[in-house]
Image (cartoon, rainbow, N blue to C red; front, side, top):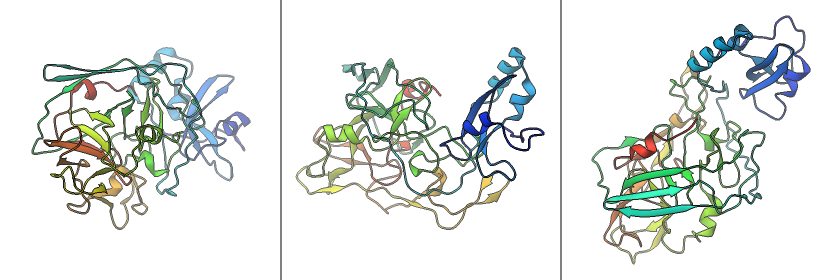
Length: 355
């Protein structure tokens, strides 16, 4: 999406400035004019200290032609044009003080070698207030039906996550670590923003969750109140906190020191990813700046740097699988939620994500 200056205006109209209050440069915005509603990006106009909503070129060119609007919307995915390339590392989260009216529903059953997960996506714990200044969507009940392998087999290769849910928590809320946010809004770019970097405002609550346009509440990071309710505290192996799309179990942070001994010491599981050293490429579609975790590609897997493999998992015994299984772990450091699969993910996951 190209942006242009507001034509022939010494200062942006009040509506354009108001549309960018309490947001960051590069965030998407919209405001009403006598000729219709314009959408664009919050930027600093020349010689202006305040952000203003700068309309996109396609918005100004399409006029009031509904057919042209539909054509342009189909051709151009709705992405925000961020220009941020460094993060403070601070994630501002809203307190979870809202008790949702809808009741949480979850049913897990076995049908032969298939585990069937049915959920409405409503957590039992409190959430933040949605919509909010960083997330304009309201939580709505979903109709999740996921069929996963009940006897999965590890592959000798890893399958990248892609833009879909990694798995489902034991309260029926999806684990969805990726964000549809790219540098300059270019979905084909390698510079996808890391939602847990704090670089861009996503309106996350204290469960490190927010809401998709479909109304789906989902976790981008550690699900704080879910783990509190399950008493995850490091004194014992983590309880089961969810199922991955490939059928393997998901745990959180704590496991056995000896993965073959259920009586061994409890230790914190550690990721094997580290920040790359040096600086990113700059110019053209590259953001430049130091590798600091603003982008997913700022991280590099270093074999043996931590306990876990590329998918934040390992072969281990667990209280639920005393004979052993491949298992995923959430970690305090990146990737937090795994970004690839050791098994084969169910198409019910890979084909079910509203954006």
